[in-house]
Image 1 (tube, rainbow, N blue to C red):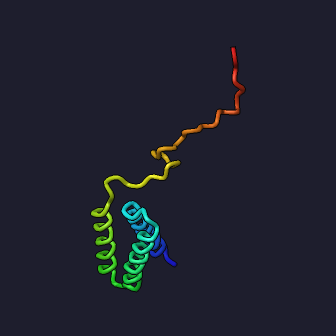
Image 2 (tube, helix red, strand yellow):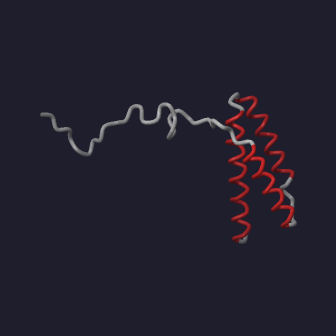
Image 3 (cartoon, rainbow, N blue to C red):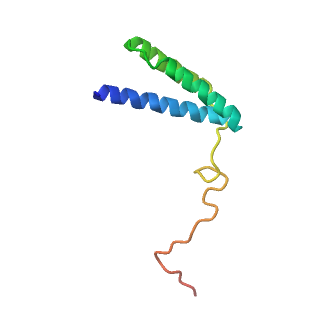
Length: 102
């Protein structure tokens, strides 16, 4: 596999992953999200066998446009992730240096 093919594969994988994350922002319910995930996979599989560079570039550009257009204004953030409601709620004390009490 050439380096260009590896770069292209990573680009498509990244686009697919970002598409799933965007869909998850809109479809919190697991059943609804799963349906949307299957639809997304079908869209990506439909373009799987494109060989012409212009067609490939057009498909990627269209997917990026849709991704930008469908971006959620208030994306879902896991509670324990950075920016989540529980992030660093119970921070463990630093055990490298003993606490000095006066």
